[in-house]
Length: 412
Image 1 (cartoon, rainbow, N blue to C red):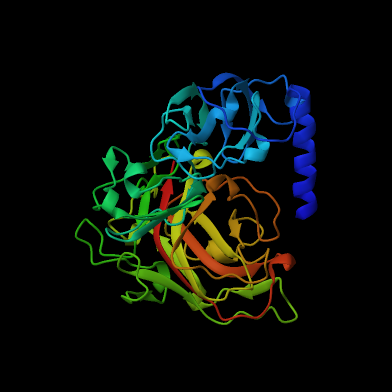
Image 2 (cartoon, helix red, strand yellow):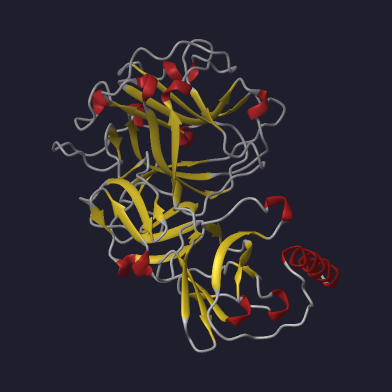
């Protein structure tokens, strides 16, 4: 570290010598400074004059009587001055890394007598960006976790979060850091795209919609049309549960069992507790077809919570005509399907609570061996199973996963 500091001081001495006859001795002067221009400290960028810079950037102020400067403020944040890096005509300073709570887009050069010279200069802080929501379908009061970048503010009142036209109260913003924002979910009738605003810009609206219930298939509850509740095709799934400690929004389905690739990893799973059949003809609350959007441009979404490690067999999704029994499950060569294998990259997979999963319907195009097929022609039944019907690479290692699933929907 000492060698880096010495190198920097040597470089600055050479730089100041280029600007004037620099003696290395600081002498404070009276009067007020005159700012001619600002540039980067590097000689390679000497011709690039600046009207702004990012936090932490090293800049060089060129002018007259700069030894009269006793304080420098960027917006309302005070910068650190080193008298060894100030001459009458050149002043080296780093843009503070602390966030301003007031944005004026000016530098303030303050003398010993508190006279102030203002210079237009923007401390550049990128606008926030949103990459994804951890879980898109949550009950009122639950923590909504948003990942992105530049969620920067000096207090909760300076970061604004919108879902559609609804603004999240500042008191409901739980926490924020550069790449993660947490706030309380609003009342259940609030749904829409998320937008984040700070002093430094606007994220724009997310493509994904919070609580997007277009193409709703099932949440495993009683249906809205007076039915007797969710009815699984051919009695599957076996497990519909509602443990308050685990529940996301009421009832959920459970995949649970032992998976052991053994000597034949091409055929793993497909047990009673590893299959869900959802039929529109058995449930008055599910339309046939199950959704109205174009399959080529739609996405299957659901929430999932993997509470015991999963390390064998993919999760397979297949659409077919209602009333086709379980032909989809065993027709390995002719029925198109999608694979979701989140354990493949690390060898094992669990989640930290409920998360949203998205599988484009354009990926529902493979047979059991991974050979491409035409997309399904019918969407009156949805089959989901944790099993392997031909892909040796998806065999994995023996495990006894517990996988919870809820809020199944297809969104355009």
